[in-house]
Amino acid sequence: MNGIARLASLYALSAALAIAVNLACQAAVIAAYHGPYAIPLSILFGTAAGLPVKYALEKRYIFRFQPDNLAHDGAVFVLYSFMGVFTTAVFWGVEYGFQYACGTDLMRYTGGAVGLVIGNIIKYQLDKRYVFIPRTALAEAA
Image (cartoon, rainbow, N blue to C red; front, side):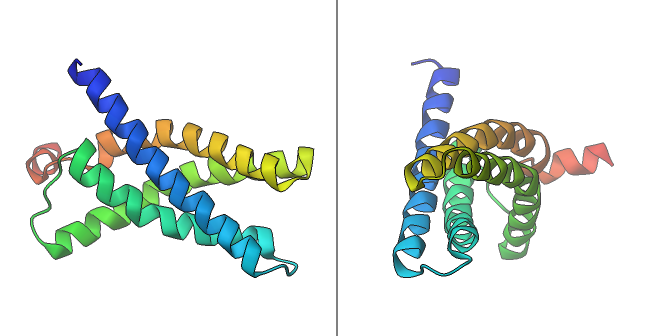
């Protein structure tokens, strides 16, 4: 398998794992809480559960990034999270769109998966260009 195919496969696998964590968490929240804000809470909790999983997998297996120390790792995670705001908006928009159009849990989860795939494609490009870059590249750019 060539380098690009290997990277795409690893990225797809890491994204699939994070998506599974996200959607499983959403399903758990929906099963536990049936109140008026069940859907927004499930999406919020799913996102919060999937984010650190995705960060850890991408940092290690996709970008092979080694932070200098814990503070550097924290700063990179903050930037990673910030870059995810846009892609999270895409994901949530697609998920809510499926919920609005179809009105069923199955279609909302389908919309969530579709939105997460779209968001992951965009997120990879953002992370490659702006997040997981060596400090030497940052110093040269300044």
